Amino acid sequence: MNTNPTIPKIRKPVESVSASAIKQIANQKRSSKLTKYWRYIKLIRDNFPDLKTNQIRTQLKQRSQGLKSNIPDAIWQNPSG
Image (cartoon, rainbow, N blue to C red; front, side, top):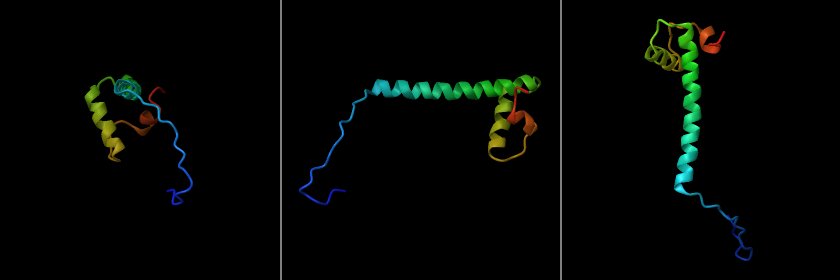
């Protein structure tokens, strides 16, 4: 904070960004993250065709919480192999 009243504050100009541009950027980020998530789920599903996608998603959530899952750790770490 500037405590000396004789020195003026230097302000940088702030670019105004429209609300629609902010929404577009947020949607692009969300889309790319969800795309990665679903690719990962589909790779695991290719290794376990007998499991439904919802079951794989449930086990992924359990694994992220530190609980046990029926899918081996090797598959979670490298689903394409």
